[in-house]
Length: 246
Image 1 (tube, helix red, strand yellow):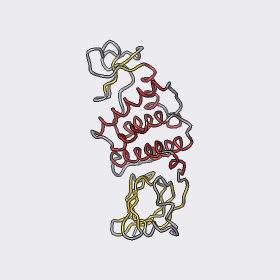
Image 2 (cartoon, rainbow, N blue to C red):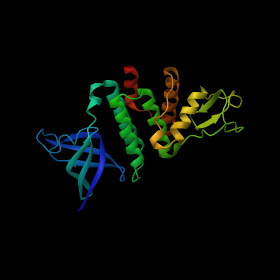
Image 3 (cartoon, rainbow, N blue to C red):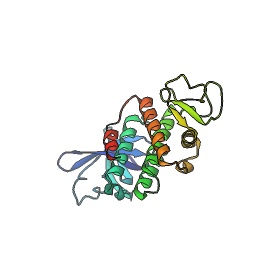
């Protein structure tokens, strides 16, 4: 029977039996693990808070017959403020949905977890616009999963930048204002392209360190969402509800 401790954040829960829970936990180095938390639905259970959605904990885990079980959960953060805003709560659940559907198995997942934790922190503290947080998550997750767009220069002529540039969401290629004229790729103002480059190429510590006017954030949001959906060839159900909240 294998025993180990792991830092992780609960990204999905379901109930089973009379008082138990099943947890999907995004960990630093084991990807997403699925584990049973016996008695966690009971209000007096020592696992009650640690088995809640978005709980970031140090989990004591043991594996028996190829099934993970949670023994203890030492809480680091529960992101309680997310529950005070339906918009922020929905967006946080969307982030979890994306991870559940796109994170490869058996990967070193530290950057995925750091990105999610930072997004949840900024949502809670309301230090950044919601759409900025959403776009950072979408484009960086796509890049981490192996779908980094080619944003260095025009794919056809090599021009680094023009006042407006085209971005093809189907293949992740950038075209200058001349080369993209006869394509169906969306035309984007240069500040939006600059923001996309920042999200993809900057160090992790700096990915949220930019700003755009609300109109341009809307354009950035549309393009990053469409690119993410094209990369993984699927829609995410929580986005429809999030759009109604906006």
